[in-house]
Length: 175
Image 1 (cartoon, rainbow, N blue to C red):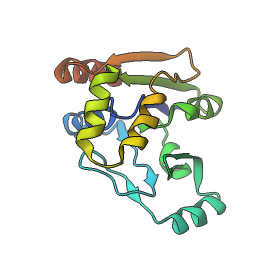
Image 2: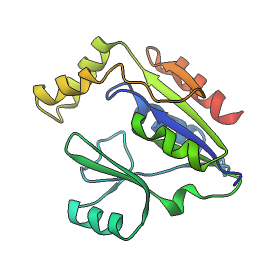
Image 3: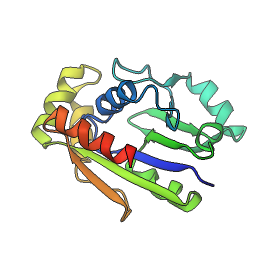
């Protein structure tokens, strides 16, 4: 399969969805690049574009074999459908759990992981600004800060300067 998969991963609050949103706007006329939407059981925030599902609908789709992969994070369910990732001769950008990288590497010939990160202090600040969850959940997210995906094909983007981070992100996608 000629699909090129770009997995965007990293700790919560690192700026993955912000970079994806900006890149999508910048590359809106590029027909080679697809920004895949995830299926999730929580409402997306202003920086995300996902398909929102109830837990019941998610379980029905999962049971029917609709998803390529699923995962649970912080009491929410996430899924990536088969239909959207199997696009020939396309570059598919997917925001994904760090634990799911190997799932894609087993199936596709070309998988590149973009690991978005930031200082733990800045991430904590961003998570608090979201006002999406209580302090104990933020602490739980921060405790996972150093978990790395199991892959050798990885590029680190330190999201301390949004313009520089976006430029690096776009350069990788355009190659």
